[in-house]
Every structure is written in C-alpha cells, then in structure tokens.
Image 1 (tube, rainbow, N blue to C red):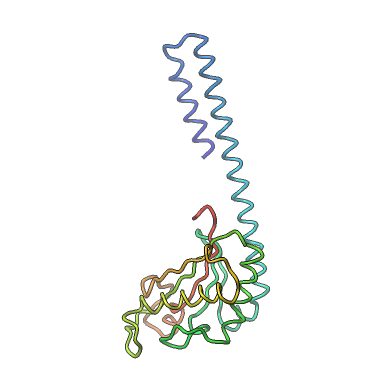
Image 2 (cartoon, rainbow, N blue to C red):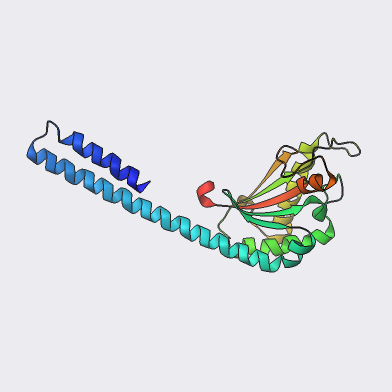
Length: 208
C-alpha cells in the first residue's frame, strides 16, 4: 500500500511540473512531499494499531485455550483466528437440547469462562453470536424453520452474556445463518452435528 501511494505521488509530481514556473514547481513539490509524509505516518500508525489488535486477540486466544481446555477436548470446542476476528465454536448440543433454544444449565459455566475473557482481555471489542443448524427440516418443534431456531439460540447466548455476565449490550449482536453456512457435509450424522453450532466472534476493530 505504501509503495502504491509513493508511486502515485511521484506521477503527480512529474505532471505537476509541466507548465509551472521554478518557484511554483518547488512549492508544489514541497506540498506533495508533505502529503506523502503525512500519508506515510498514517500508514505506520494503522500498521501499529493492527499489530496491537492482533496481539490483544492472540492473548485472548491463549487465555481461552487455558480456560476452555476441558471443553476443547470433551466438547469439540474450537478456537480459530479468522478475517473477522477470533472465533470460538461450540457444537449446539453442548448448549441446547435437540430442537430447543433454552440454555442447558451445564452450558452456563462454559459461557461464564468465555465471558470472563470478553470482559477482561478484550473489553473494547464487539462480539457477534452466530447461530447455525444442519439442513434437516423442522418437524417436531414449533419453529417455522431453521432460521428461527438458529436465531433463538444465538439470542439465548446474548441474553445470558447480558443478564448473567454483565457484558455491555452495546458490544453484542446476534446473527442467524440457519442451515446456509455449513462447515461440513449434511450427508452424515457427524457432518450434521458439526453444522449445528454456535459461534462467538470477537470482532477485529478493522473488520467492523
């Protein structure tokens, strides 16, 4: 990016000299150089901000790995850095009964562990809760479709974070993808299980 800006300024300098007096050329060159210097400072500051952000998210990732060591082994929870930010993934069965959106009591200690990191290590970051299902049609529950089920589950996590963990509501949002963002095949039970999930994303500030 820096090289592209410098190249663009160089081109402007060349064309700016045409038809100008010596004094005008000098003044224009000084002005353009000042603009280049200002842009370079902005680029350097953005780079430092990005590096600091990644450091904070990496520290949060390490802390979550320590706190969720049992869940990562026993419940197939996952931690991954993505373009959006740091993603924590839980199988829906860890939090909810089949076809339900009421939080299981055994899920609460796990979410409390996550919330402790959200409130401590990354207190200035936005958080998105994403709900996902497999592609099996709704048959034995009152949900209209998988959209509603995934949405209700994401909102259940949001409300738990607000009501039980004192996370600022302004940081939180809920998104439903229903069955339309699978991470595995829906042709096997294991694949469908992997697709039924809740994702908690600590958003990169640059991705907001």
